[in-house]
Amino acid sequence: MDNSEFFVGLDIGTNSIKVVVAESSGDKVSVVGVGSERSEGVNRGVIVDIDKAAGAIKKAVKKAETQANITIRDVVVAISANMLQIEKCQGMIAVGTESKEINENDVRQVMAAAMVQNLPSEREVVSLIPKQFSVDGFNNIRDPRGMIGVRLEMKGLIYTAPKTIVHNTKKAIQQAGLNITHKVISPMALSQVVLDDGESDFGAVIIDMGAGQTTASVVHDHNLKLSTVDFEGGDYVTHDISVVLNTTIENASQLKLYYGNADADDASTDETISVDVVGKNEPEAISEEYLAEIIEARLEQIFTRLKDPLEDAGALSLPGGIVLTGGVAATPNVEKLAKQIFDVKVKSYVPSQMGMRYPSYSLGLGLVTYASRLNDIGVIADNVVNGATISLKNSTPQRVLQQQTEEEPESKPVQSDPEPKKKVQESKPAKGKKMSKVKDFWSKFFD
Image 1: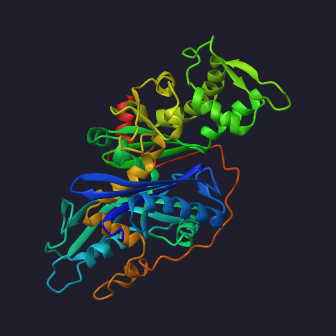
Image 2 (image 1 turned 135 degrees about the vertical axis):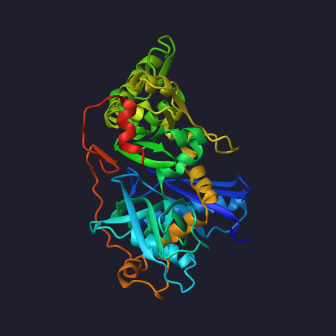
């Protein structure tokens, strides 16, 4: 049985690679298989060894195939928000058909025209999100196919990422014998499941707490508006425990998993934990409170660094508040700590599907949900980004030349020690006197 009726999400994380197989029926997405494998060749969400990553992907896919009883060929893959840039775009073409009836090829052409940007050679368009079409000056058209007109325009957003990240991801997946149907920026996929319709419309902040990094993203009007990455995550918590208690990384990971707490005040001072210490024959006893102090200190640092860019953008005034997800979000009392630091309402998201009731599976579920909800225009946009052919008949050469088959960019070395924090957002308006946080956010993110 092939997987033509199924959607397969591939989440390449720092600590694990997860594959989620789902079947879509109407508006319902049912998970039928899950595969997970320890990551290899991945550092802070970026593939740094293609061969090792491809091998781990194969193993995770094999597990998902066995559980779902299908053969997996096509996957929807998440692209990290590292160094993400978000820009507005606009394109216009003359309708080429003799009847002046707009067809799919015209839509592809105007999308290609909108993508004509002076992008640096080291960047690549990952997603194109059409916001509206205009036909002969009539605006707010969602799908212009079948309409009559002589001038077709489109306004939208483009999301670009470093070519190195995109290339290494594609190469590893291809080497694993798979085909990519959609590339999705991670926060866009997460927003499909961790936010309800009202939160996604009126605005909310998603904080994805992974092992290698923590990503805070602002979603408003059902679109990703800002993303900022802090290159510390759950692995740093584990490292802190290992160093402070003088125990191995493996022991530190188990302590974090079974006894971890993000609130030292809530942890017990009476209950003790036995810790194997390097260089000592006998284990030492520590209190749960002491372990919680180590965990809380690191998470507090991460949240505090993320607070500044979110506050500057006015995102903490959004009615949806903050939603925590990712593996570290499973730490007890992490919501309480986040609420103390951000001073907004905070909740965590955990998938409800059987076998996936852990926040680290949120992205995999988001990928299959994103793919199942993609409408015809969204599919066309993805095809254009991925290099779909556009008919040259009755079209302007300048526009068509921009829409070529996607080339494999040259692989560049990935920095092993990236900058502490990257902040990206749509083009900034000039700074003026703040009347209020809400007004400031309105000026920055509302179209």
